[in-house]
Amino acid sequence: MGRLTGKVAIITGAASGMGLAGAQLFAREGAKVVATDIVVDVLQEKVNEIVAAGGEAIALKLDVSNPDSWKSVVEETAAKYGRIDILVNNAGIHIAKGILEAELPDWNKVMDINTSGVWLGMKAVIPYMQKNGKGSIVNTSSIAGIIGGISDAQGAAYSASKGAVRSLTKHAAQWFAKDNIRVNSVHPGAIFTGLAVNAGIKSQEEMGSFYVNHAPLPPHAGESMDIAHAYLFLASDDAKFITGVELPVDGGWTSN
Image (cartoon, rainbow, N blue to C red; front, side, top):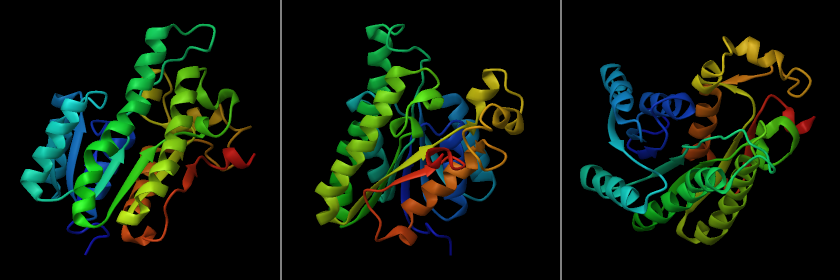
């Protein structure tokens, strides 16, 4: 038996990077995975690969900033599987503009997806978890929600949005503990994903070379599966007495 056998998990931003790694790992651990993303063609290809490898997964289009889109996804999930046990709010974006450079549309776009998307996801899913009598929510923040400097890669709105997710997670953990719903946050540091590749970084080691003075643990940058394992731990019953915590996965950056 896997650590998530019999559980139904919704994962946002699952077409690539950390969300995809989470979907792959959750499926291997026995979950029925509802993989969601706005890029539905790529998402379907990845879900097909999960199914071909023996996992159970479906692909659903989701705009996390749209409450009607959330309503459609949770209703379809409940209709197919009868329950929702896990929500991983992984979807997010970054715009590398500081306080003086950013314009209001930049700010609003980042906040809509990174923060409002998390709130809307919890708002949509928690009533189903209350019916189940339990549930686990994992929200993706960032070390940029804890510390300043280059941790936010020059993104003022990103830093603010991830700080909001950190606080919102603790709020939800307190208010829904009575329903046996656990709510925790994961805080990635430097992680080698497709975004890094698109920025011209060719390897995890190359990315780590930029952060050797910040994250003391070699190779100084993580990979998507490092975050997926954090998602798995907090989502699973291994963490059944853990709620309201922030789990940095950052090679020791926040301890430096």
